[in-house]
Amino acid sequence: MEEMGSSNIEYDVIVIGAGIMGSCSAYEASKRGCSTLLLEQYDLLHNRGSSHGESRTLRITYPEPYYSSMVLESSLLWEDAQSQVGYKVLYPTPQLDFGPSSETSLQAAISSCRSNSVPFRLLTPADVARHFSDAVLLPHDWIGVLSEGAGVLKPTKAVSMFQALAFRNGVVLKDNVKVTGITRSGPGGLLVVSTNSGKTFYGKKCVVTAGAWMKKLVKDVSGRDLPIQPLETTICYWKIKQGHEKDYSIDEGFPTFAAYGCPYIYGTPSLEYPGLIKVAVHGGRPCDPDNRLWIPDSELMDLLKTWVRDRFGGRVDPDGPVSTQSCIYSMTPDEDYVIDFLGGEFGKDVVIAGGFSGHGFKMGPVIGRVVADMLLHGEARGVEMDYFKLDRFDRNPRGNVKQFGEQVGLSSHNLSCQLE
Image (cartoon, rainbow, N blue to C red; front, side):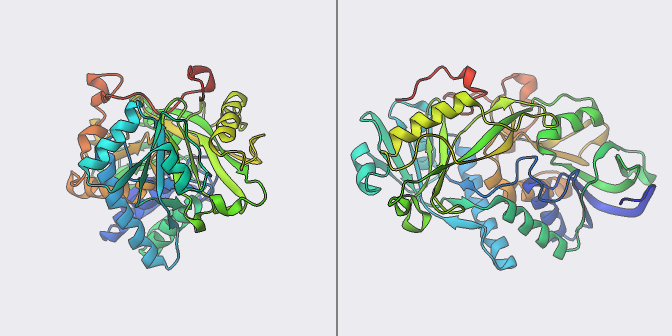
């Protein structure tokens, strides 16, 4: 149990939130020789937020070209971390993107591949059926985009890996410590991080990577309203029919995949649960992370049943998922990240990193690098940071203007599309 009172230790960096972003940030700070404290409001590796579970996709194909270059750097950092710890959290496999040939976001992803020199192949529906032995069937007016450099990440294992590497570097990890405030009231202008236990911690710099709780904490700390909306989403696993298990196995080269359009549907090959394949809707319903439903949206499940029946040619049971798990997205209006200095009285001593909008996990290592650079050098190079600054919402409440439609659905009730 945490004792009352104040810590007499002064840290170079205090990281609030020990999901993938916080764990990578703590690790990167420790690599630079910073004394670092990592705080988590729940148990380490808990399942209440956005960094738990058995699979996430790593893919280079993005409609926005500034993300593809980030994935390329992040992939190298994933490999470096694996080599240090001695076990794998990333399992390579191709990525298959598909959808109507007229879909603007898919065409933007193709353009992004070209601008970033990402190798890919354009496939007709017949090509897709032939390449995957009829395990994936597309309507006649759809196209496929097959690319390399993708894979499946094991999220809980990955977070544990970065925490282990951070600990090896001297990072202090404390869980079940809920941060209630940050002030600049310590000796010499140090930041003071207060907690619900009554204990306080002192630091020169601070990083807030609180995920779905980011909006609440930043509001309490600075009075600023962040345009971040938590969404409750559901990860779904579907049973592969007997005799077809190899058709969808990562060992046989089945890809991670994404179906562009409305709704955007994604999935991973059979890996973590033998005989099951992950297929889910990229979206969810608005929620309070402290008071969520924990159950799937029935209308979204109906959409998925139809999709599974039509796309997998009867080889996957479409009657419903056999296993589900609740997860949370932290959505921004433009689906881009928020990575910036909090400013105000905190200047450049507090960095906030959130709003990862359901596509951030793969970026954990590069976000950690960026955050550490911002704290220590006042800027981060190698990433187009203007897309992630807070002031974009001052110019336009919707944030960055894009030439293609939104990808994340806010609920089944807002999906006006019909599946093929």
